[in-house]
Length: 261
Image (cartoon, rainbow, N blue to C red; front, side, top):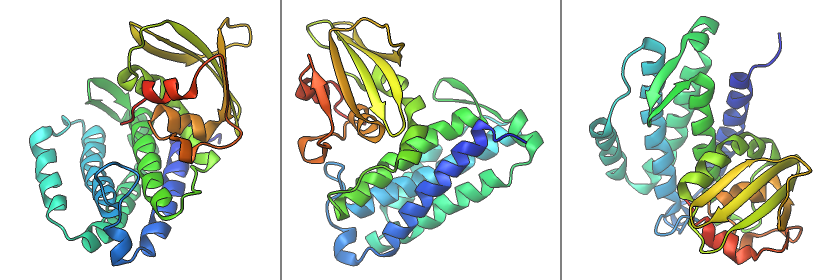
């Protein structure tokens, strides 16, 4: 039996969870309260965010399985309040457990439940793969926000970064900032290889798959994990690989275009 997109996303989530658990398992009290990559958030704050969102996503997972509406903002606020009230050590410990519990529930879905799974969430009609795709982006990027706070050389593993790529057009269109001038950029990534066409201008940002004959006035070449971090607002100069090469476009302009989420 061939591996489905759902299977591949679950593999990526398990890999990211293993990284999160390994990292948080060795965090001491001082490290828990140290700044993370997210402005104004400590390592424990990011862990808390991942833990609370895991609880919320576990509820959504059950809703999609059972055919019931997704819970709303009021229910999410209750979860956030509970996690915000925890001490840093508990936020770190409980985050690992909550994310493991989400994955256990996802793994337990039968083949029939996976096929039938649907949920209207965030204005989107999602199947299970689409739902897990959202979770992959959040989990992988926020796990990096923690790992890089403890090791400045940290990057996103390529086998996880490639599963976040599908999120990039949506994230770019939603968070990308308008530019006064129109500019087209061909993006070529490595490890693994991907090709994108990026349009910046007064009307906003558009990112789409590219073919080799797409016309553009500029080119950006970089590792896939670095491009993921750029679109998610995490490619500052101190965390930019030496292999990144921008021709016909200022890398600082691209950083300003993608302020982060």
